[in-house]
Image (cartoon, rainbow, N blue to C red; front, side, top):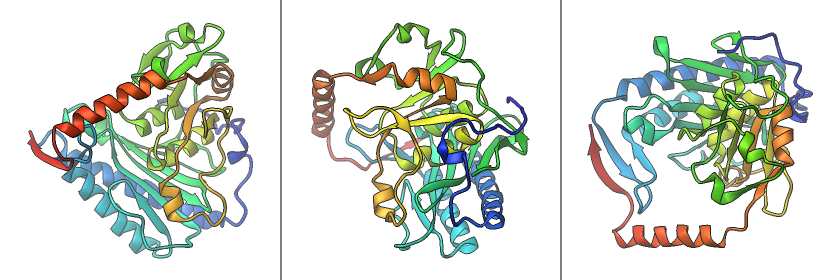
Length: 330
């Protein structure tokens, strides 16, 4: 962990000022409860970790596993949030959005990010809880496993980022450096092109299998940069705020022809839960200097061959039988 004084929020406009209409006392309570909920979620996951599990696969190619740990964790979180904040909306990975059609506050849940790691006994996973106010990240908490039962990284808008109450901050290097860690998709070289020799200066590349875990590492200075291709909202809702409040920058790219731009919101005021659930964009995150440096040098490749290979793999997976396959691990 990297402890530091409260950051000065040089990242982007999302943390330059509090969002209009947010009650500061209420937001502080939301952050406190998010930390509490994330810690309990971690306990539920650890209780299932390295034990026999029933596994279902949501896709034909067995790449999207879900276990009773995912479901038990999300069920508990939904019940706890509904009890504490009955007028708040809820979006989760494993279930449909709640029935709130016009909620100002929306909780975005990924009960277990890194299920494949979890299934294989690798303690690189996270439970992510993000809270939006009118589409804008307002609070967040991420549980990550570790010594002593794990830790919770948390933040609220304008309040700084913390790990179990101790301040954290992003790395301080001005450009990508060798010897530092950078998170990239395992197929990054197929999807992204690099200018000015950046590919050779990205440092030690890692693909950890959990976006929320990697964003937590960025927030506490363990990774200098991470790039995610089209994550879902529950992957990044908490991490985007954590990185920003830790003094970092979050960039988004919503189309192949668009440029990297500062991330501010998941949707406009009045956005529906269904629209939030369907949100997609590529995300780059790191300290402000490194993210800005990389953002001018990384762009999507032309991908006809990549798309053909993915289509072929999906066709082969479909030929093996229907999805929602079930098996037992352990």
